[in-house]
Length: 324
Image 1: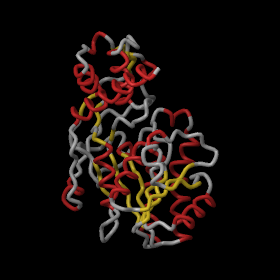
Image 2: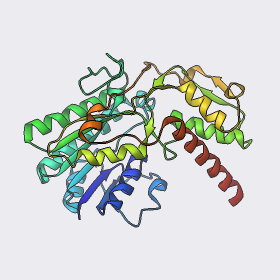
Image 3: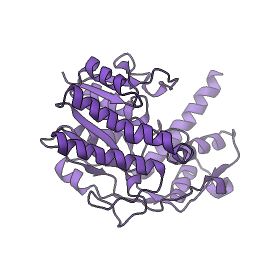
């Protein structure tokens, strides 16, 4: 039986990854911050099957203790501030968690057991002001947010530890991946939640920012599979993970409202406060390397993903109403 340690286990990706590893008969540990009041809602259905232990990306000693206590074969670093707009409000803390947090974890692995295989959650936000479309593993990085900058540091320090200490360290440069477990602050979930509320008469409008921005959106459940695949190879390599399709936020809005039998133009209001200081206009990934080397490909298409999210939120509000 293999053992895995997941930072950020209570997040969207952490919950799907924990499910996947349990199905593969792993012993799964997940870190939680001692001072945290974080919501464990996403993992409550598997909480009895995983072991939660103290681990804080701001505290090197806690990471060493977590690794010594769990003795993992694999570590997946999924923790950190992931809501991009919020990183403008707390750029220093974003750097501490996302950039230096990854460094502390890599250093803990180096000190405890260099044979542990390490996965770093990199992001398409590192491409930012893109040099080419689509983006692949050779595309030049140009991050446009504190989040993207911090992730780029974490990405390169992972490469540095791999090359300096002969450790199995790799990064998945994941493009946007969504699900019903996405936080309400993210645009896909913000839209699906608003559609559900409007459909059920709980709200009358949806305030949005830039509808022209385009993203490459996939399903989180598909993307955690490739995280696992990356740690099963003979040699560690970095991979772009994406659908290879791009859709505008306006398309997202239209699909979501149409699925609920509504006309989005009757409800959507443009609010300048939701426009970022430095916007990333277009992200679309080329995941050819992962498809060829890892034999991976996404299963859930964009329209299906949005319909699943809308249905999930409508069901959630229906359940709340009937239980109250």
